[in-house]
Length: 135
Image (cartoon, rainbow, N blue to C red; front, side, top):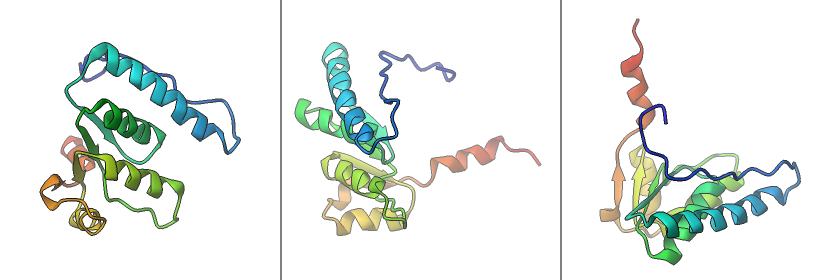
């Protein structure tokens, strides 16, 4: 909103619970809500970044509604083995195109079986913040 981007829908997705099942339930809520938003606004493309339940939900909605899905920060990997690795890679398997922050992540996707022509190493978008820093 601060950047002037028109927001067509806001979806509440966090459950007030520390139970292990809360993220699974939140994913279900997201899939339902995103499906309604996609039906209402009929986007040409869906874009998500990262490795959380919102990305997995977006990927599932894109898959079943046959809308191209772009996944940013694909191919990343947390050494902790956290569930986010599995979620990120599952979303990558569904994605139409992948945007990685480094060659290592691009190569990981190719090794996972993704077509190289659909994987784009765009570098870290966080590096753009350095332009704003004055010394």
